[in-house]
Structures are given as structure tokens and as C-alpha cells.
Amino acid sequence: MTLLSPVFELRGSASLRFQSRDEQLCPYGGDTIIFGTFGRGGTRIQSISRVSAEQEEEILLRFGLIERAEQAPPEPGNVTGAEVEELD
Image (tube, rainbow, N blue to C red; front, side, top):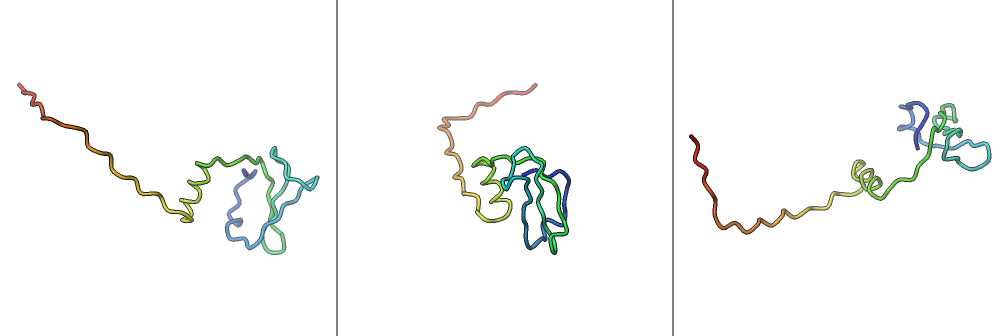
């Protein structure tokens, strides 16, 4: 969800609700997210888009809800010898 303007109070809000013209959130904006004590704060929604699996994983990693999987170091290639280049 992309909001029309930045809202710093949203992070600390204990509750959220949505206000819509037709009881459904529109992906093209125009609806409002209401937050704060007694619903006094609010901002318009600019757009709504689906989150891909990769984006979902990145969000969960960022907020510490999952841990990054350990990746094994790559196997070294078969090296038979090193070549030496003479410098002038």
C-alpha cells in the first residue's frame, strides 16, 4: 500500500481502520486509512499492489520475523597449478 503522504504516527498506532466509498478497498487509491487515538489521524491511500514472494521474504527479514538461510560457500574449482607472469 502506498500512502499519499508520509505519516510518522502510523507506526505507533494501536489500531487501524479503513474508510471506503463502497465497502471495498480500491487498488487505484481514493480510500483512506484511519489511525491514532479515537481515529483522529488519517491519510489517503494512493495505490495498493500485490507483494511478490521475494518482497514478502525481504519484509519478514527486515523486521526480524524470519532469519536468512545460511548459504554454503561454493566448492573450489579443480586447480592444477598456478601460472606466473613475469613483470618488466
